[in-house]
Amino acid sequence: MATKNSFREVNQNSDDVEAPSKGAISRRAVIAGFVGTAGALTLAACAPGATTSTTSATAEAIVRKITPPRLDTAYLGEHVLCYRPMRKGAPRMNLETLGSQLVAHNYGHGGSGWTLGPGTTKYVVDLVEESDQGKSIAKGDPVTVVGAGVIGLFTAYELVKRGYTDVTVIADSFDKLTSHNAGGLLAPVSMDNAPDMQALIDQIGIDAYRFFAAVANGEVPEFEGGAKIVPSYFTNREESGLEPYVGQVMQPAKDVVVDFGNGTTRSMVVYDDGIFMDPAMMMQKLHDYLDSRVTFVQQKVTNFGELDSALVFDSAGLGSGVLNNDAEMVSVQGHLVMLKDQVPAELEYMILVYFSEGHTEAGQKVKRSFYIFPKHLPGTGPNDVGVVGGTFVEGGTSETPNTAEFATLLQGAKDFYGI
Image (cartoon, rainbow, N blue to C red; front, side):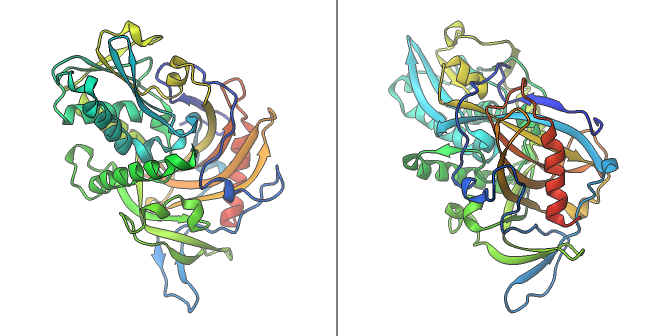
């Protein structure tokens, strides 16, 4: 674990190249959640989540009791920077013919790579198999997946499950990607979807929910322990982004009052069938499953034409933006802090609330939030559970790390809990 004053940067582009720095971040559920004067860390009408116990309901609302995590310096672990690959207008999920090569694009999911991963890969592989050019490609022909983040690995997984036998995953890096360090809440985050794309994004999210629910219920043996169902708390229903899932795969949210046992209470909504995906564990399990079934090649791809395959899946995140000279791509920097020496039983819940907009020390616009998820990194102690975030810095790059945001997000977490 790093000390409090250290941090690590991770990229979600397997090609390890910087994304364009221009563009504005927004998301369907995020914008409404940022309130107050720019730069002021004011809480929206929000409240925390629950995990330890549920008390009897009052006439007005159910009361949930939660013990706040330990947030003093001694209980803080690694400080991490990561870069979400967001594409304005919606992720790119389409086919392109380049000479004799069929390229299936699947990138730009922002902070929703895990939320959409299984659904979006199914959707794009379906596009290939339903196309005339795709039908001419045999399942024994060479297929290349560019990118080894969550989208790239789920693409390889989907192809193997459908019977493709000659799959190669090419990436500049396989470790310490943003996909490893993502928080793990199943909810659409850091996206900028055009209205005409939203219904498709919602359906893809619903398909992914079904997959992760099966994982959580022990129905997908290769991913045992990679996901679990826990209460997920938000300021209101709109900000959750989960309302399109209600009646399809989720139960309606409940109005609750969360009591932290220290005099602080907050009014919130809770989805008791929220799903936490453990990204680091899932990435390891994806690699374990694929190791004997696909070929992994560490190589920087600069042009699709340099690949021998007639079918290429483009899933390199920020690297895809550079490969395609895609002006709609923007890097969205995030800050998060791992926790250690916690009480795991007291962290079986998730919270996501939004604070006000502001500007970083580099003068970049930042949308601040507070989230906490029960994440556990492989190789760490059993009590090293929990991750706290987070920020959305449009155009943030390694040249503008904005490290003062770590202290800001931790103070926001303490204020939220009333610590």
